[in-house]
Structures are given as C-alpha cells and as structure tokens.
Length: 310
Length: 310
Image (cartoon, rainbow over all chains, first blue to last red):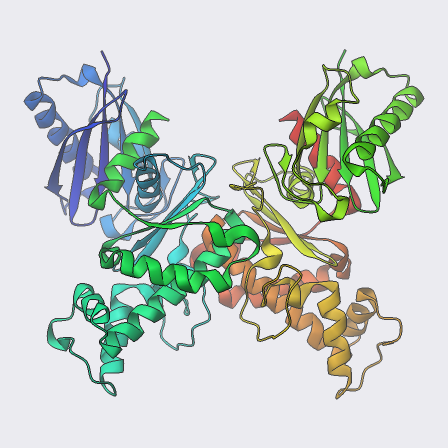
C-alpha cells in the first residue's frame, strides 16, 4: 500500500512539498506554503504534516499509503541532526524525530542539507545520472552538493560540499558571511556581483541600470557586450572555473552541474566557465563537462525524495 | 579455514607484502621484493604469488588458508582497472584479473591506489579510526588519500584524492610533472624544497650543506633557526595549510594525517601547519586536528588488507 513518498524542501521563507510515486519517483503534485515564524522547532513540522494531509486528501490517499518523507534543510546536517540553523532558528535538534512526532510511526523520515540533496535531485533528473557529480548553486549565497559513488557527501559534521567558502586567490579586506575572507561566494554571490558592477561602473561606461540591479540585467548586458557586464561575468566564470579545477583533482567528478538563480544566464555562462576551466584543468579532468541544472527550484524536493528512497 | 589476508603494496622499485590475520588484521610478517622490470603486466603478479607461497610455507599455511589479497598500486585505479601506470609500464588492464591468474580461484583480489589505501591504513591504525579522514603523503611527489564515511574515495576515474595537484596561489612559470603549473607539489615536493633551498641560499647565509641536500638536513637546520631552512619549512607549511582549508570545507574531514618522507620532520612541521591553518579555516573547521602518520612505509600494506576485508 505504501506507494508514495514526500520530498520537502524547507527554506527560510517557503516550504516546498512534492508528492512522488515511490516506484518511478514521478512528481504527482507540488505545493508551497509559507515557513511559519514562531516556535519553528515544532511549528514547521506541524505545518508540513497538515499540508501533507491536504495533499493526501486531494489525491484520495491516506498516510498508510505514504512510505516516507525526505527533508531538505538549509543548514549542515549529519545523520539527521542539526547543530544550528540560523535561517530557521533551530538549535541542536534531531530533525527526523521532531518530524516524526506529527506522523504515523510507519513513515520513515530522512533529512539532509538542501544543496546536497539538490545535487542528488539534479543528478538523478539527468537522462543518465552520474555516479560522481558536483552541483554549484549560485545565488545570494554560493553553495553546492557533492555526489560520490551515487551517495551524498555530508562529511564529518554535515559541512561537506560547502564549496562557496573555498578560498580562492582574490585580494579583499571584506569579511565573508562565514567570518573568513577570500571565499568563492565573495566573487560569485549576488551581493558580490552587484558590488563589483557598481565599482566598475564608476570608471567604465555601462548600459546597466544601477538603480534596479539584477543579476539578469548584468548578464543580459554582458551578452550585448556591455564592458562592465562582460567584466563581471568573466570574473565570476573564472572564479568558478578555478574552484572547479581544485574539486576535479580532489573528487574526480564526472560532471559539474551549474544551478541556482545566477545560472539563468544559461549556456553563455557555462561556455565561459568551461573556457576558463580548460587551462586550469589537470590530468584528464579537462574532459569533465559543465552542464546547466534543469529542475529549477524543484531540485530540493526531488533530491529529498530520492534520498528517502535510497 | 580462510583466516589470513595479504596486503601488498606495489611500487616502482619494491613490492611490499604483508601477511595479516583475517579477524584482527594483526600483521604477522612483512617482506619486500624487487619489482621485476620485464613483462611487468604479468611478471609482477607472478613474483607476488611466488613470494606469497614462500611466506605461506614459512608459516605452515596453504593457499586454502588465504581469504584474499589487497593490492595497492601507484596509479589511478577505478573498480580494479588501470588506464595507464607509467611507473610499472602498465596500460589498460584489469589488475585483479591478472593477479588472479596466479592464484587459486577462491582468493578474492581487490585493488586500489596506493596513497588512497595508505589513508585507509593510517586511519585504521589509529586507536580510534575516524569515519572521515584525509592523508597527505609528502615525498618526491605529493599525494593523498581521502576516506569518506569509512570508505575510500576513488572518484569517477580513480583520480580522487590527487591533492598534490590542487592549484595553490603560487607564482611560477615552471611546469609541474602533471603538465600544469601552480600545484601544491611544486612547493611541497622534495624537488621543489631542494630548489627553493638553493635559491634562498644565494642571498641568505645558511648552515645547510647544499652539496648533500636532504629534506632532513633542511628541516634540522630550520629547527636550529637557520634562516634558509626556516623559510622553506614555513613556505611548505603554509601551502599545506592553505590546501587543507579548502579540503576542510569541501570534504569536512575529522582529521588530517601528515605522512610521507617529509613528515619525518615530525611535530615541528605539524605545529607549523596548524599555525598557518587556523586563520585560513572556515566555520568550525579550525578544530580539525593535524596528526603525524604512524605506520611508516607499512601504510600501503595495512590499507590494502583493510580494503580487502571490507
């Protein structure tokens, strides 16, 4: 009877839920609810269970039909435990246990980091998933997920795959959100991209509207050969390429998947990254392809469902 | 009856063999033979089988008492296959199959990269092995091995853990053995250390005997506050620390183990690495300890035996 799985992606603003068939992992329905802001160590799970109940009813399902639920959360997770999740005001907590409080005991709960599960989701959405894959999530923050031999990498404390905070050779006095400086995110995160654009616009002519900056406007300008847009996009591509050349000799992936809001720049960005990557690449790692993420903002729920099923 | 395992470490010059008890992985005997230089795709395995036979006889064992043999080889390996091994003149080859030609069919053969298996050997020789560990092997070449969730990391093609070829911010026009430039090995490998010592000695007074350079003499001089020795050791330590800070956010290890010939510099080197590591370390990764490798040149055979048993 237990032929269905839920994949849930808990963010600071919204919670996405997906109902999947257990055998094919076909997505039957996805919805989004607001992330509750009070008593979040309990209320988030309560709301998820309520929403599951609504979706079940709509599809004439009972909790008896549900095998389990995979949760993607915006913090380091190790074996289902979180130490601290500032986005959700969680402290040390057994996430799976708290979710289980609101579900019948037969429902399995598995939890991991959102970017890590997004990597699993993106990779498993490819026509032929790879055994070893790395996902870059380029957005306000720069994150990532690592798949090794088909399994997610959590690392010793759940911090595995925090590729946005790899140091890169980039001179700066500014402190990154992580407390250090010289992180990949300080070149490739949205904030850094905006700052760099404004800085360059002081001395270069640009068509970019500096009053209403968006990553899209900067990349669109670059495609139209705007000198400021071009320089920003080249710097971002170069930094990603450099970091990828490190990851290539350490992890030996079969693919780099470029995701997150910034990846909407599309093949233009991927081509530039690849161009910078080639001279950095060691051994045979120059042949590792870069591809665009395809699942949009559903990577988390898809990955969570796959993780549960494993 | 099959209560024994062999761990074998095949190098370009010597082949080390270890006979281990299967249950405790206690090392009963280890020997070393010369690596044959002709017809190496066959002769190496022939010689190993012959030497196993001799060791068996000495301990009144038969091949029936042997459960399996783990092989550590000096090249990238994926699922027992090698594409190219310049040190042994091997081309594309199923290593396990070739070894099996000379052994009774009940004997399991497992193969992986030597530095990767050394990581397994070093980690499993600790009083309390970690689930996530990284080994640096500092010698003529700089290599390494990565243990994730207790398993070795081979990566997609067997290149996983090639940390000696991580690019680091180091200005050089010289080409590394890998064909690229700016690799960690170009600062921390023996050749690089000798070259840098000679270079610094042109303008700095030193007690180091430049005619008979050894890593030991350079590190000993550093301990005696020789300015050239000190500078070289600081540069080496800084480069290792920098690379470790990258590995820490990508792999989230619980320990860094420093091995290889250069590590004979001992706690002096480890302390310096740790000192440089702290300001680079992100998040909670500053607490990851650096420790010295302990098994000397037996890490490969120990790791091979552990790998076979897994």
